Length: 91
Image (cartoon, rainbow, N blue to C red; front, side, top):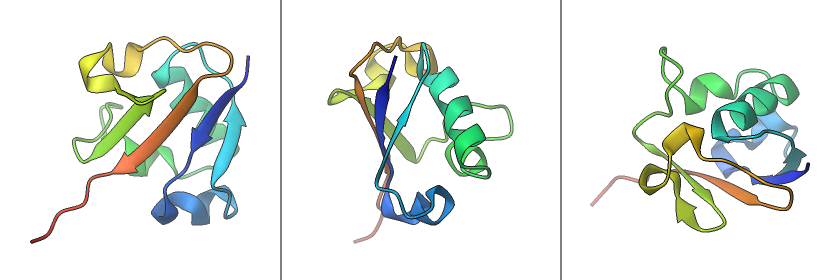
């Protein structure tokens, strides 16, 4: 199974400047673990101390926000595209 993960610019220094990475995982939680194995240090930027996705990080599977699906238990299948998008604040 191969999932395409789109990496935001602020995290690309941890992914050797890659904008997209092909990884495996049955769900979002497993995919984040796979991303951490591939790019150590990225998980602490995405997840809090309890291992939950931080509130200011948005994750989309094929354009669908996982907060409205099954959050980090959202299932993944071969060919899915996952986008990790940090929230932007300002005025």
